[in-house]
Image 1 (cartoon, one colour):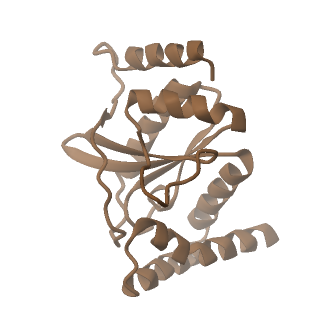
Image 2 (cartoon, helix red, strand yellow):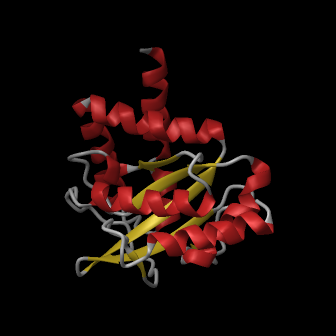
Length: 201
């Protein structure tokens, strides 16, 4: 993304935040890392996710695909209730996208286990109607983007798969794993199995 495009994105973002707009715009806040936990599905997550997706597209360009993925995108799926988003990007666009998104309030990872610069994940915290919602924005290539969407659709379509994934989450938490990146790694086998089953159908 060129410097001119980043500047244009900033202007578009300011326009969306105009008090003349009737659309809800979540306000950025400070992200604080939380431990993995088992919460009931929050029906407000998809509403907030749609608002955040519009802001992401406004920052990087409306033609870029942004999707609400992860457990909070699947009705009835318990989890951390962190709003996971996937943004599709060509490799050459990633640095410019990160710059544009950080400028509007997204935060870079700083932990030793942070995702690589070629496939970054940004943190977001948004205050809306007196509540704070946490979000992870995954900036990924086309293949991983499609995989995230397929996993979401598989869980939405099959309650048995959803329950299987939820049970695996409970098992991981019961084992004492609550740190975010370790929690994700510990349930990756079930994620891969569900994706494989979906391809065979």
